[in-house]
Length: 126
Figure 1: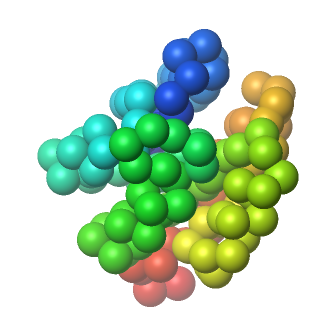
Figure 2: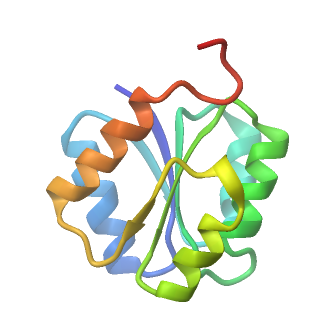
């Protein structure tokens, strides 16, 4: 399965995502903000970055832009419960595969992750 980095500042949501993805066999690292996610991205390769848009220290949009620049082969999936944040994420172009709207179900999460993982990453020849 895939190595997935989850950046989500809300502990209950972060734990829900971590458990749901791990139950499907994914290797999941879950962190509380974008700055911590950048540190993990520098340590080891990941197949997918699943990031909340609204976070402290470094928000998901800033994280997505940095990830696209520094790790171009990384697939990206964003999530948000706020309409304004979703619009901001759509404004950054093709960096994100999709923006998952909160609240979401385990089925919705798994479908979004499966779709993102099935899409060739920007850093590969597809």
